[in-house]
Image (cartoon, rainbow, N blue to C red; front, side, top):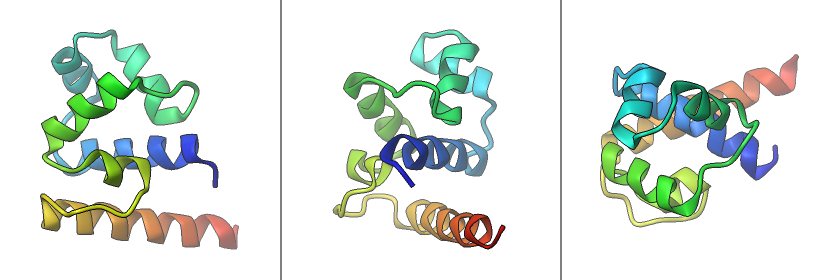
Length: 95
């Protein structure tokens, strides 16, 4: 899986596990919903500035969003996201 796809998947998982809609996140970031939706589908990548804002919003590290080893800030949410991410990748590999 390439980095863009991994970031997209993590952004979706973070949003869903925080009970936000794409429109909610887009409004918090000051952008159109369609722009944010492109991040979650992997059509475009968020800028570094946007990644930092998302990390602050979710209280996770930028490293977690980018798939790098990191110092854990919000352990329960990060564990849940990483677990879902692993499960989805396992299921996708089987199909």
